[in-house]
Image 1 (cartoon, rainbow over the protein chains, first blue to last red):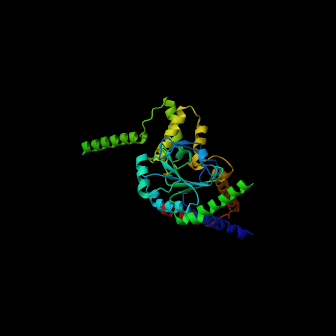
Image 2 (cartoon, one colour; image 1 turned 90 degrees about the horizontal axis):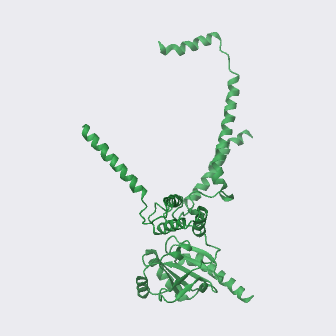
Image 3 (cartoon, rainbow over the protein chains, first blue to last red; image 1 turned 120 degrees about the horizontal axis):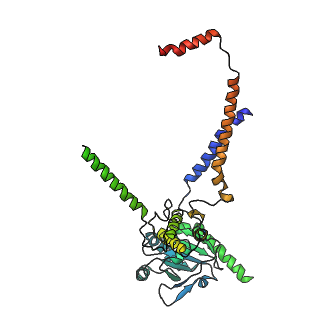
Length: 184
Length: 160
């Protein structure tokens, strides 16, 4: 019994060691979004292509969709862009762009030069919608269900790996949920 | 020699005074309604973490997000919102993560109470060891006169 007591420090040390070792491989930049499970914040913003047309949060309801926060000043968005083009061609899910703290002219020029993967583009000039979404850097991608509830946020550029491993399974599941709701 | 020393001290003091200025200015042109508001807003912004540059608070960070957020904090203070409302605004968007001082709740219990518990364990172990030592000290061996003399001789050896 007495000898067992002597092992307590070793056991404590090992337990700490395991936790700290695991901590080495965590990415502190990866933050859980505080908005997962909450509805898209209310907004009323101009369309990027046409200042006279207004998009609101109500317009995003009814269908599973992907919100993609992007800007012309954001290098990772350029990296992500070709993959978004591929996705848009597959026509799996509508991709709404949120043009975040950007210039309308520059954004439109970029889209006409490199191609436009977005179903619609929301012009968030002051970054107010971005702030309400808890965006801390572009690009960020939100998955929204058919009720307009944010289900997932991915911070960083979306590529084939992220898409096949995380986003696509989730979208498929949500689309199945939406179908079930529509049937009942 | 002396003059150069005075010069050196003078320059040093001058540099120090500039450092103070540099630290005190988050370069925003925001006009607060009152000095009290300014003080409250700054202390609040100091206690909130920038979601992008994670080891800086909202005032220190130059990132665009931090800029937006601190202006938002300043505005809300001027609108008369209380600290709790402002903190709620931030955490509902960016999560508990932005609080430099975590809230006291079940999932942060270990964070808040851990150090106290560790201190208590340390104290208990210390007390136990102390008591043990006292117990062994209590049954000291008595020295015989001969041994005592030898000890004295040894102790005094270096004094001579």
